[in-house]
Amino acid sequence: MISHVLPTYNRAPIAFEKGEGAWAIATDGSRYLDLGSGIAVNVLGHANPDLVAALTEQAGRIWHVSNLYQIPQQERLADLLVEHTFADTVFITNSGTEAAELAIKMVRKYWHDQGQDRTEILTFEGAFHGRSTGAIAAAGSEKMVKGFGPLMPGFRQLPWGDLDALEAAITDRTAAVMIEPVQGEGGIRPLSDADLQQIRALCDKHGALLVLDEVQCGMGRTGRLFAHEYAGITPDIMMVAKGIGGGFPLGAVLATEKAAAGMVAGTHGSTYGGNPLACAVGARVMEIVADDAFLAEVNRKAALFRQKLEGLVAAHPDVFECVRGQGLMLGLKCKAAPADLVKAGYAQHLLTVPAADNTLRLLPPLNITDEEIAEAVARLDRAAASLA
Image (spheres, rainbow, N blue to C red):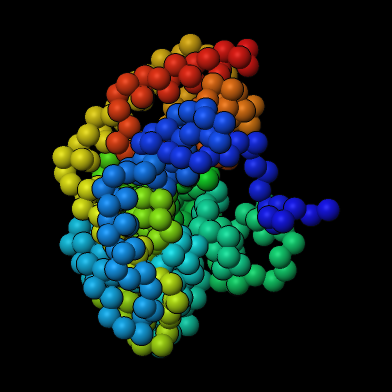
């Protein structure tokens, strides 16, 4: 008999009823050190007092009014995003998948309004842009596409990091290039600054739009507010979600005025997107994470964590190959699929996230303490030793 919850996940036999910072507390009272953060979502940890206060205050006022009216909290969040990024305008969504759908629509509408038949979007193998039919068509993963029938046409996948293939594929009829500066689901694979600069140059040469998916690598995760800042380039459109809500469902599409010109009244909408409750939380996350001192601490902790992880790899050459990633978006490349290591972590009361390319994702809250980093590596060490 089918479960009452649609069985689309193979769930671990653990349920949590409370969280405190980097710790998730199970229903039996056990405390787990959380290096998954709800898959890069809880950037300020569980039950962060600042976010609880912002949520509680807004909850006592008004939750939802719809986008038929002006929403001051939405305008505040948009103002903060524009202030701290390349963007001129923002549309607030409920998720990263919704952000991907709007980004695709925005690209297509831009070229339609230019009177040009440019619809093809170039993407990359290993990408993950969400699970709607449009988003899985963009990623092109056989695993996600299989069985869902005809998908949205107009996407072509290229080998990850192959700039020669991109240069051969991009033409004056290409609508856009869509890419994650750091692949998350694909195995914590960062694109080099030089490659990102070359992609921007190729888009400029051919007049194509550049769409960056920073749903997982954005919001301070790499030590900059957004990962593309390291390369000194800006996109035309950017998808944001996960960390922007600090645990509350929230996403956004950021764009230049030029790229967004076609999205006039009636071209897109959302019943819940931009609601006062979500935006009050998102604005508080932005106020905290966009601070230079906060980001400096992320980088310091990232260096400490990576140093300890390098030692872990050296201590367990039969389990690990290398450490990769940027900031506090780190991956342990394993000798085999990391499922057994994830389970071994449960035994050590440690939460991690598997990814493709035999990679174990480590995505702790950005305010994890030095002591918690040391404890995390000690538990990883015991988990790895148990597999020997």
